[in-house]
Length: 546
Image (cartoon, rainbow, N blue to C red; front, side):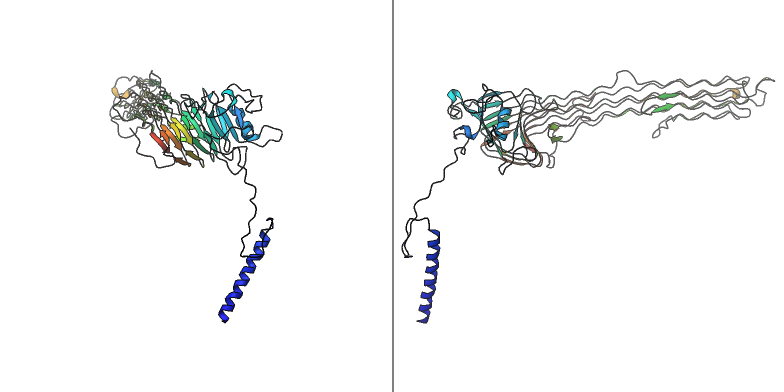
């Protein structure tokens, strides 16, 4: 019994609590009962009024308070209402983002008639572009547009990137919803119309931008073929300088060896013939080696000739030829994305050929031997050696081939969010990479100077300097990268593609050949462009096509 009483007491407390709660919360009711067993009914409250501006872009009516209206036949002096539309899309975007004036709040929506607008536009994130409206008769409806044959709003400037969506940091509007709906438009990039004058890009999402593409076509044009690299001059590089002749015997007690000659090849590069050996009394001086010192172990090293002692002097050795520069590498890598679109990779420039080494200076003669060489009363020195001839300059390298322009429908940069719900996003033809330029032939090396004439015996004569080496041929340059063809190219962006959307590439460009190379020669041949529906530039690169 005590237990039952306790349960009843608890029940009474609960009922009292419910009654107090009910009385305090039903004060808006016209009548209620103190009997908690009787249900109380409040009269229905006012129903929520739907927002007339909300709804699907394909069915929602166009109202003046909901957006700014733009028509090919409008006037930018108009307020942008249905009855008085503006003429250009960019002006309409500005009114939608900032308001029409007189304290009007931004509508953040543009209603565009079907038709052609030859202008590039910049859309702040959070401003919607609803194109494809049928404006005949002032209805601004989609009847006969998406309900029948499509008649989209065509955005097709002759140059530039047709549509750019700004990120939150760049947009001049604020708010929680900073996503732009792009609906009922056909964005068409002209061929090679991007900033670099080579690529074609239809749409760019700036860092942090957010956009949804629905019932629209985003179409890139063709990229431009890369220009060939400039050839080095067709004439030979500068030749060497003939060495100086040595002084004759009996003209001085010590006849100074012939002075060196120098070929200046630019960029601080020189070829110098070796000094001739001095003509002496008891022995001739050795000639100096030519410069620069050769690389490796060539058959001739430009050594100076030895002076006369017990035997006659020796001629200077010929200088080593400069090394020919090899063909430079063709362009590799995916390139990079940025605010101006895509930047490809040029082929590497050819290197300069090696300078020819100067010839060694000839050895000097001696004036005294078993017989008096020089007549009494005259100087007694032997003849001086001639200096080596300087080498020829190395040929200049060709310039690398330029990259082919890319064809990318949409570029999405860092932190942006792109959703393709429906429609088409198509790349076209990437440009072919340019061929590398050809290198220049090196200059000829030339004669060394003659040694001075001797008198009576062979040990008194001076020896000649060696020939300067030929300059090496300049390197042929590598070819430029082929242009990509991509539906979407992204870096650090979030991309979502619905199954109702078509995202496809076109044909990528082929890589440029190396300079002076046949098509079957791989050295210097650049990589082909990439052809994919979506390529992430921040992902590990796939095996490049060849």
